[in-house]
Length: 160
Image 1 (tube, rainbow, N blue to C red):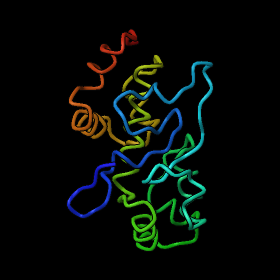
Image 2: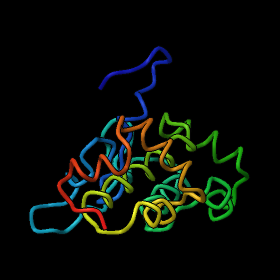
Image 3: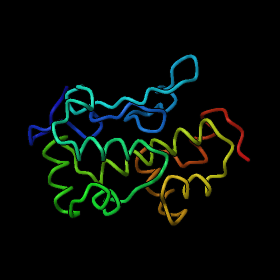
């Protein structure tokens, strides 16, 4: 595992292994050949989610894997922490900034939906938690170096 100048692994190496949340450019890779999905999660060093010591962070990682697009504030409320406490604890336990982690999760889920569904791009933006289509498009292009429309066409799924 590589580390940046701070000694922490890069955000792209902290992953949850589910159909909606893998840190790679191929979101479909998290499904098994039989179509089922692996709902386990791994910490920064590849250890299972159960290796995360704090039960609240384990709960947060489980919530992040769900279909609902949570904000940092909503996650903090669910585990009875302030936003700032959650941010510090998440960083300490995983080495990642929770806001960046959530954005990556949303974009990975969007990429998966673009390649595997016929939902419109606007519907996908709202589904993964973006209130504005333009914000989603800008974030997606920054992450994948392709517009959502181009990404879908590269995936050989016809756009609706």
